[in-house]
Amino acid sequence: MPPSTRNPSDSIFRVGPQQYLHVLDQNTNITRLVVGPTTFMRQDNELVTDGPSRMIVVPPRHHCVITNPVMRDADGAVVFLANTQQVKLRHAEREIRLTQEPFSLYPGEIISTPVTPLAVVPPNSALRLKANLDFTNEDGEAVVAGSEWLFEGPATYVGLPITACQTPANRWRPLAVNLTHHFHRQPLPTILSHNHP
Figure 1 (cartoon, rainbow, N blue to C red):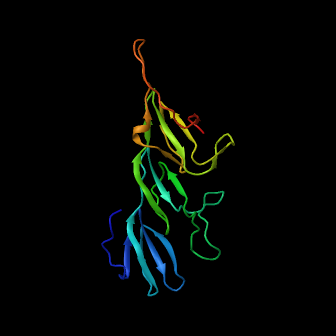
Figure 2 (spheres, rainbow, N blue to C red):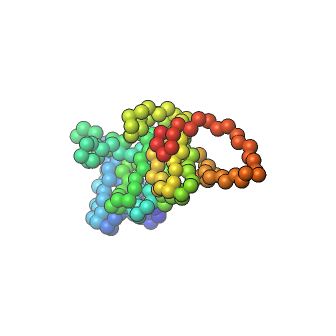
Figure 3 (tube, rainbow, N blue to C red):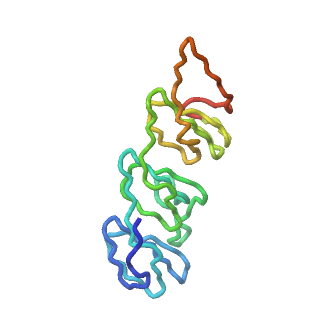
């Protein structure tokens, strides 16, 4: 996001379409989100801490990672602290966001991985993945931190916020061995399974 060219002490902020502001109320110490298009008139007890900034646009087959994402209820609505405009955050957690309508960052949210293309795993290849945190997979099985598995192609790897691809060098490819050749194999930690832990 480009830095704002406006002075935070200005009184009038013209927030265009697909732009947003973070406004700190110095009486309550709560920072709220103002989404454009609108003309925002700052009160004496308010301070614009960020913006106007452009909303984040994630095109098809791309993703970004948000650290400290907002908490949402069962209907997908943002959860606020009781009787305030203070959003609840899931501190120290990460959320992968895929193609969607342009969105703004709520106060406290950080874009830790900018918008980047999804990883495409070609045929006869695999990504070596490792769990950073304990979690329960789609089959209801508990996976402990440090577990490793292969994600085989051809496929597009969307990722989980609690996993990490070891290194780009760990994009595995098959090795063809002729009858007159041999190879030396190094032992690796146990791989749980393929595609899903």
